[in-house]
Amino acid sequence: RANESLPAVSTSDAAPKVPEKSAAGFVRQHTAAAEQAAAETGIPAPFMLAQAALETGWGKREIIGRDGTNSHNLFGIKAGGNWKGPTAEVTTTEYVNGKAQKVVARFRAYGSYAESFADYAKLMKDSPRYAQIAAKATAKTGDAGAQFAMGLQKAGYATDPAYADKLTRVINTTLRIQKAAG
Image (tube, rainbow, N blue to C red; front, side):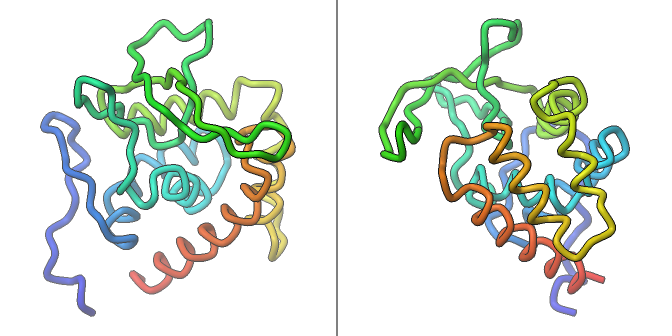
């Protein structure tokens, strides 16, 4: 296997990490944090890894604050009025009445990628909007990934009208990567 000579990715968040730029590297880098979030939510780790991959372009388009600081926000979670932590303000694309528009939005910022996964898990567990999504994600059907993706779109997780289709494709890619890694 081609990846056997690569070093294991540390789960320590003490030193800032440069995100790996390949899909397999992205999955390796974030698997431990995704598995921890899966234990708390019941949402399969590959589904969360896929969502983080979709939101960041496999780590290539992370949310960077105006001062150059990485927000470590892998899920595009916005900083609403109840958010008390640090933020990163960036221009993003939102769909309003089906039309893409550039807007400036405040996003949550974290000290590490593990914090991003933990906050995502908390959001999925505690928000009434997402209460039924974990149940769909753990369904023992061949289309559990598609049900999870559609549940997120219906709950309003993203404004992109094609979000569920895009996420379903990335979930399938993530599952193939993990299967190939053995």
